[in-house]
Image (cartoon, rainbow, N blue to C red; front, side):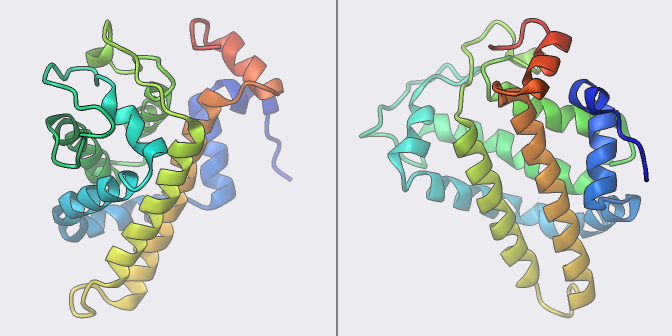
Length: 216
């Protein structure tokens, strides 16, 4: 039986990721599988991102955050009744989501950088700048429910996209490997959102104590 230091996985990102990878089974080979699919999937990222925003705009709850000024965007902001998926503010945000999709398939998962990036993606949605380019700008605050719901929907969409690739382009056995690797990665990404939102248990207390200045 492997010993896991409970306090360590609550306060150390890399130890937390190491445990998640071990428990979920996200291996070095899974990372390589995602990389091998990049030439097929990354060109489809724009279509995936467009579909994401079409879906978000079906609900006022998931549309409203886009009526607030995004960090780095200086254009006119449309209100809830006027905003559309073609509004300048949405085009600006689509660029960030496209980068995220691309990184999932091109990053080296044996390097610290990708896990730091995915952790900051979670943190930035709590109002903390997380990334240097977001410092000194209006905070981005999105409910955890909306974040995790979107991750689940994206997981299903990418699964469908991969499985619908022609057999001659990607054989079923490889499609299966890509889908499994991607969904394992999404569960880890989901946890790297949750760790910054949790406020009601010992993990929250330990995490906040180790990271002074995070939103309470």
